[in-house]
Image 1 (spheres, rainbow, N blue to C red):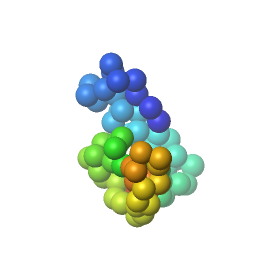
Image 2: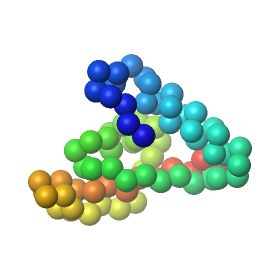
Image 3: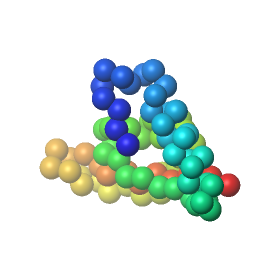
Length: 74
């Protein structure tokens, strides 16, 4: 999921993510996970109830980490 910079901080990402979570629970999905660069959106996902399950340090060429986040939807 990606929200253009000019549309961020308006709650759109949270609304999109919530809509996705609601739809996938209808088909029986109980857990969701995503990967993010350490400098991008981990804070956003933490606010939405996601928790870290992995961090790969120096994953990207600029030295940034790759972060795994997950959430139980039940």
